[in-house]
Length: 373
Ligand code: NAD
Ligand code: DAO
Ligand code: ZN
Image (tube, rainbow, N blue to C red):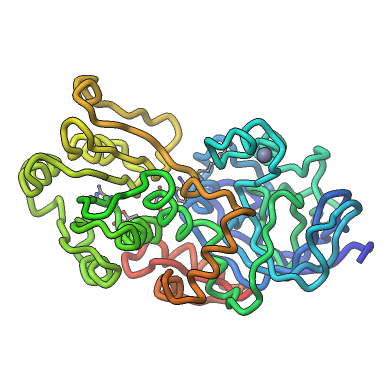
């Protein structure tokens, strides 16, 4: 505590290049900051997106990673909520409980550290990482691809130490995002029909949320036929591959469901799929939630008449979940056996093998790779 720590981290030196494992120096936490020893981290598509250089907020050199779990190593001045040894999950969507957003009761998008977080900096406009004296930027307020990281105290939540961090680290992004989008954002109702586009970690979690809220029909859609088995294991009642049809998939879905779905979700980030998801909704009440992050500059389109006639288009970030307030409940659900988490971990690597984790992401068999940091 109070001293810089030398440790290993995967640095993204520049866009489009593999990450490189380096010795970095991690400064002690300043006021309202916490230094965390990261034990495990998932690798998410957003990390790959930022590394690719197409993310407008991607800054280099940086330490990526935003789906981690660890233990508090030390706390800065004024931190009362955390103590050394606490098990914690960093939050890329902070929760300060004070800002206009937090107190609105309408959104989870806390803005307390938003401006600096988007520029790879801590709230005081500086960075806690250096490599050979050169400053290294933070990422999404988390930077979990490092043995030690420093985060703002609003960007961290304590979790029950009974939950294995090698698993619940995934609650830091993908699982919470999908489960929350179904249960918090769309609020899928009992007996309803649901279609989910894209059966990755996020889409499978939407399926899980729809099951939890007792939807009666859950149609999983993916262009990878290998996703059928896992979709059904998570509770999908149907599986459709758009490649098996020579007409728009929304037409097929509307026919299959007597006029359309009550709820649809895009978990692909493809703007054409977003259109299909909206147009697959039932006239008068169907609601479509966009979760996928589209490539920079992409725009969505549909005929406005689709909305005039009662379909609703909305989006969801981090599943609409308020990290500090709600993470404990999700971890409890995992411990009680009502939230699947272990089933998402298909690959495990060491930090040194991080580039392999990025490679397997493109392979259809990977849901999530978890790194032992
Ligand atoms: P993933 O790549 O593991 O899964 C995507 C799935 O979509 C794959 O199975 C793929 O085969 C399928 N797919 C691709 N094109 C398709 C198409 N045209 N039709 C049907 N299926 C198609 O990704 P993931 O980790 O599950 O993330 C999904 C999306 O959610 C990404 O865009 C990611 O950036 C985004 N995301 C958003 C948030 C948020 O808070 N809004 C959080 C995390 C991730
Ligand atoms: O602008 O207040 C804000 C929050 C922006 C971040 C929202 C995150 C949604 C997508 C990120 C991809 C998941 C890692
Ligand atoms: Zn806030």
